[in-house]
Image (tube, rainbow, N blue to C red; front, side):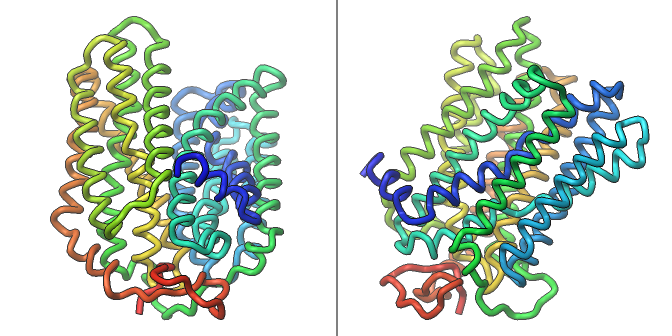
Length: 420
């Protein structure tokens, strides 16, 4: 099917707008680490303070995503997404206004911005079934979503540096957050977002986390996040050993290119069998492709190995999105997707923290070994506890229409993630 399938998907009513609006709305979050550091440094802050501000933003974001995701499931998208985007942008405005000299105000501002980052990522995935209807289209949309993330996290830093060069780091922060609000606005005023309603949910304080299968999935993707975070640090150490700072950029670009290619190929065809079992195979391939990085050969071969290491990342995410949808208890789909975002982010932060001292004492090879070991841990989690995942995704689901339109007749065999 190839590119034709993607074109068919984007030609569906509202699909291109929702994808574009979500990506634009997520720009403030994708660029926050580099934008906050550049602003803090331009304001006279030390690297330690700049890093601490970024860490607080990341922790607040990790805490806020599932909370806001649950609010979306309870109250709908427009009543949560747009106010959250406005408050998050206000946090960055307060940071620029207060500066980094007033430490308490600066930390409060970034915490507010991170905590209120709208869960647009989870919201989009909750919308796909109602927008696209067919199961094969929804699965392809998840793959396209994973590919688009790679593009966004590549283009985002370039936008920051361009705005800094044209104006200032403060202007970059303000402009990107203003653009992010416009992206969120574009999504929430769309017909699918306004019409979307979550399924009836059982009142439970654990929300989406009461699903054993979802907990298994989150455990596996925590280690995938650790692997990616450790590669980021190990790549810097490898660049230092070569004496060429540009090598790090090439490695990260190669990793993104591999994910881009893998996601495009994965989403171009329909895959038979249960996605839970397919995810186990993909994670096995992902782990195997991380292991050769520890050999740290010359830059050319290392760049090729980085492409290979990225190939199965986007397919793992795309398949993981399908599994989340199947495992989430009724009425918790946005929260469930937001938990995946949070877990992945926490894992990446842990990987950075672990790989730093490992690379400091053992060199780049040891840092990349953390990535390989983490990939194997992700595989082990799924292999050992995967019965809960398979049980949750099989038999307990009924073919159902999208959550926002329960009156529609379901397509035969389509599972929207509701559990009986």
